[in-house]
Image 1 (cartoon, rainbow, N blue to C red):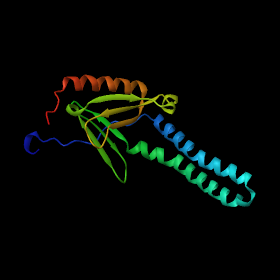
Image 2: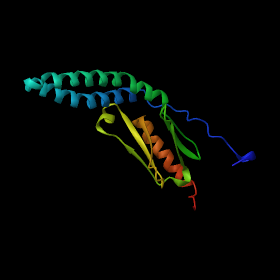
Image 3: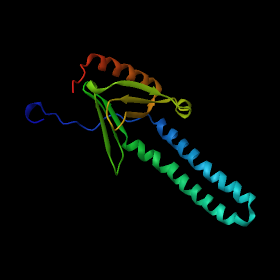
Image 4: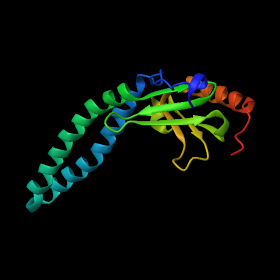
Amino acid sequence: MTGEGARRLRPPNNTLDRRAIAWWRTQWLLLTAGPVGVLAVLGALITPARVWLLVPAVVLAVLGLACTALIPVWWFRVHRWEVTDEAVYVRTGFFWQEWRIAPMSRIQTVDTVRGPLEQLFKLSTVIVTTASSKGAVRIEGLDHELAAGLAEQLTHITQATPGDAT
């Protein structure tokens, strides 16, 4: 679109809840603990292979702890979301930035999801489904009450928005 009617979509304004950092850190710790634990137990039990099992366990533990400390903070800095009367849009990534935009007229369903860890941190994920082959737009790491209000807001906006005939 060009001319007077053209509007440039500005970067999304809203950050996630700060508790998302702890949620992501917990996920990294759990992801790291499984393989490290298996290698450590096997290293303790299988004497001839002890070095070959414990060295990778230590390397994985160090890498896992580094990822646990750094990546969630990085993710928090780059994840943004916004809802306008026209669309829901999300920006993720740093090196490979991805913007996902769901026009209100194309939204089919709005869901909230709270896994066990999200419940522990009082967080939720809002999932906005469209007919896109790329899949749903996900806004992860929201306060659970904000997510419920957002889902309700999106439901009202999409009900009042005429569907796209294409």
